[in-house]
Image (cartoon, rainbow, N blue to C red; front, side, top):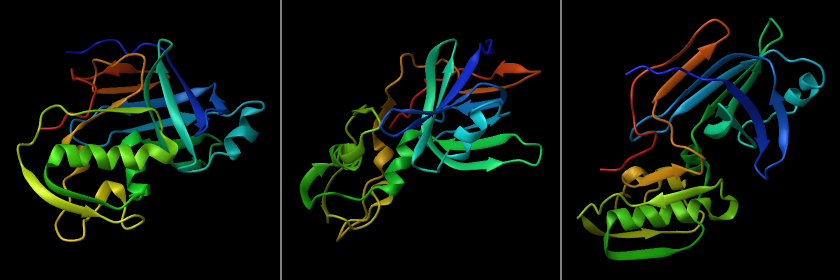
Length: 210
């Protein structure tokens, strides 16, 4: 099923919520929803006026990209690579909010004994986001029905790819991570530029665990 893309705007936001730059002249907007994985987005902006100086201050991982469709937030996540092109435009690539877990560490020592792996994954995500929560909620779709013993040490390894002391950690995406958006979009991909607007394919707009 193909549906209209709508009107897009994009902003670059500091992790504390302050607007760093408004992408007033959008040349390209691309964003996606990917099942069981981290989605990505990309914008190309033609700076004008004060926007040039604002975009020069954009930093990877410190700032996040927020894309709205028809006035409603539809995608957000940390900026990975802000780049200036030869034609003066600025391109910013970003990853979905769970990508932050690859830059977070366990913040406490924790031992699990005979615990369902989904509950362990939930703890990992809650703990990883706790010091600087990007506005996520965690929902266990269903227990894995696999129980095990896991042990984590504070400040050892990244939360998104954590390995416990004695056994392999469960994947953190055993559970559902829902972005705190006004509306979960029906499309799984939206790619727009000045000449072309199209959505491709239906989808739930979330990361769904098994």
